Length: 93
Image (cartoon, rainbow, N blue to C red; front, side, top):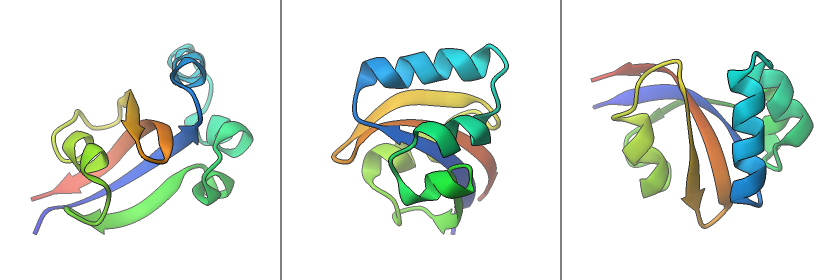
């Protein structure tokens, strides 16, 4: 079964998500931005979601995590929770 590790930042608007993505792409540390801005409890650990299998996260998450480029910031990804920036740190088939 496919598994992945990823980290994310959750915010309440697409605008905020794009703003944070620009900061990270300009050299800000993903984990530091997550700690400061993410509304998800995982923000305290730099947005780290640990290891999970396909189907454990919402579909919008899975679609990106199990097909997107590794070590690149993806998003905004809209889910029922808000807007996410995702970084896939590893994946195995």
